Picture (cartoon, rainbow, N blue to C red):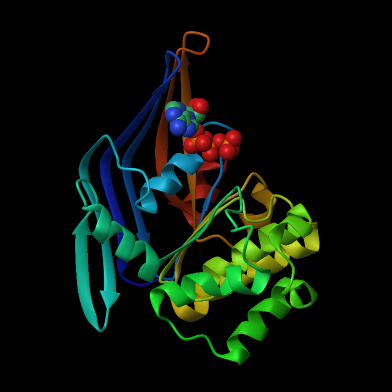
Length: 256
Ligand SMILES: Nc1ncnc2c1ncn2[C@@H]1O[C@H](COP(=O)(O)OP(=O)(O)OP(=O)(O)O)[C@@H](O)[C@H]1O
């Protein structure tokens, strides 16, 4: 695997609403280029919170160290995530990160084709017809391109969201349950496409899934969570147990 992309040490995110406080604590996490990292854990343990922080959408509450290291135009650029100015965060998101949102996040007034090409257009990245067709073929979207998202099934919408995140070949892909609404063969295709990007393009891929078996054999590392509940619902505290390598995970027995 390649150079380090993310380094997190003693990072914490506290979220409170309606008298309920949730804390995600990340003692240590490193993600490298070319790494396919799976994030598994029970509902509400903080998987999306983690991805939102990695996507520079959600700022950590505190951080001993939280940096993102990118290679742009042949130059290495490293930035501290805590306190990052929004315009710089937005620029990094556009150029470097592809985010497959759990909710899809497609724009209803654009066609499938326009939705997919949007991120590339905004980032000023040229996509060849061959690249476009290759991705559309893998995701089985060839006959859906002129439709608006509201006329698609849930699974089709999810595949469009995957295509939109991948089309500009970002250095980092964050995928929040990208296979939740598709059948198993399509889930395998999406997983293999993401895995292929890690292997062939050196992309750092971080994929949240409930389906451990989908990633068990191919993920390089797996992020797990230890959840502590204090009171019935008042405080939910989650500590992330590093990103174990597949090898280490086998040694400890691989409990979720
Ligand atoms: N905007 C918010 N404000 C306050 N608390 C929030 C907010 N969003 C989520 N939470 C809380 O943060 C915790 C973690 O939520 P998160 O969405 O990260 O979990 P998750 O592991 O992705 O869950 P799921 O698998 O169900 O999608 C939950 O207890 C949730 O109630």
